[in-house]
Image 1 (tube, chains in turn orange, purple):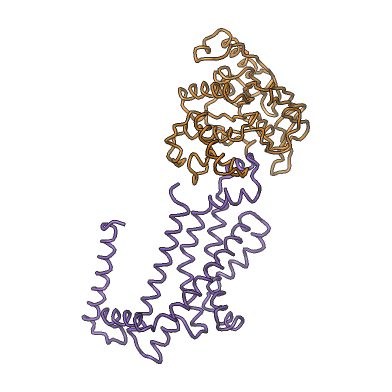
Image 2 (cartoon, helix red, strand yellow):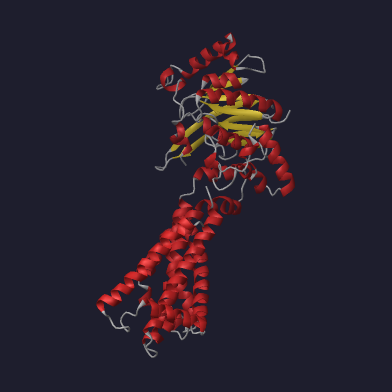
Amino acid sequence: MTGSIRLENLSFGFTTRAGEELPVLDAIDLTIPGGGIVALIGPNGCGKSTLLRVIAGLLAPGTGTAQVDDSPIDGPDPRIGLVFQEPRLLPWRTAADNIAYPLDLAGWTEEPRATRVASLIDLVGLDAAVADSRPSELSGGTAQRVALARALALEPAVLLLDEPFSALDALSRERFDLELLRLWERAATTIVMVTHSIPEAILVADRVVVLSPRPGRVVADIAVDIPRPRTIADLDDPAAGHAAREIRAHLADPDVPGTDRASAAIEPVGTSTARPELVS
Amino acid sequence: MTRSVWLPVIGAFIIFVLVWKAIVIVTGLPPYILPAPESVGQSFVEAWLDGTFWPHFRATMVEIAIGFVVGSVLAVIAGYGLARSDLFARLASPYLVAAQAVPILALAPLLVVWFGSGLLSKVVICSLIVFFPVAIATMVGIRSVDPRLIELGRSLRATKRQILTTLEIPAALPYIFGGLRVGVTLAVVGAVVAEWAGGNIGLAVLINLAKGSLFDIPLMFATLLTLALVGIALYLAVVVAERRLVGAR
């Protein structure tokens, strides 16, 4: 199956305004098989989003390599779709035209474009009635569905999600997580999802990769042994409890100052827009 | 538009004319200082019907149209440069501000010497006066483009040109139109200043003729009225274009 990701000895750093080197990612080794779902979890500012941007080809790694299907990522890549924390819809385009934006950039003609948009609207479970709505008229969840459809427009083998549902309330979030899993069954992509939520990570992923505080290193790679298809009740499964305890234990690594359950694991959602690694 | 929208506008105009008439009656000013509204109205209609206005109107409109388009296009390009290149902003800003600080009235005679008393000097003066507000509005608009949208474009492998045409320009368009609204009214001012600085045709030339050799003060007022209507019509044209292009967001 396509969409395998291989990161080898991957490091990344920013240069601050003062000219100092600020290491963000430190020697990340990670292999994700095609069609797998991996959740990246870690304390605030640990470089999760930066790692996602390196895989997306938006940032070039300092050292090491990132590959999809054994060919290197050397810039934004059509094999990879990206969903951000915010929907990032273009306010002057309708929902349907936002979904079609990648197709327009790629020069698709009218007819295949319309067919593709219709199938994407169906794929992400959008109400066809919102197709002509402006982003300002959409609810947060609906806008994020549009963003998801846009990310899938060019049929990527890899879907990267940067805390995609963190702006939604807890109940909607669980519903979107489960819908994402149904979509994954149909679209057959590899998924890498950055999250702050341990339950979300367990509900969605085959493996939960725990990163250390900055500079981010892989401190644990925890398998979630819950059979698919999953439901919300699976979070009460003993395997889920076991995985959660293990994730918490690694997030609260006593060797690392400033991380404990309060600040790392149970972090309030939606406070992460000002993370230093996003400021460039 | 519905009646309820236009009713207050028409009402306000009627009150304006009535106050004007009242001032004429109460103060007893002679017609060569302040002509009565009905004599201005009569002169306005006659000058349009007998063809007095037409060549002057056409000449002024051509100056405004070319000057506005040339000035706006250059200003959008320069505004983009100001927003995206620190070096260009540092080098060009002092000259732009200085050019704006010197009154166009003072500059116009010089420009007529340089570019002659024909269409070219009018276009240059109109362009100059339009340039600054449009350039600044474009700069502010481009700077305010959400960098997260640019990142989105990059993640979708948009080329530089595509980022410009599909992200930056549409995102900055409301700001650019703010500048164009100011610019289009200034273009009318620019045409008048340019015609006064040296020209033999145009509505501003007609104003000079009317108060000078013709000594037809109602005609002068009617020409002023025409200029005001030109300004309103052009402003509305920009607003309509803005509604079309910016639309609901």
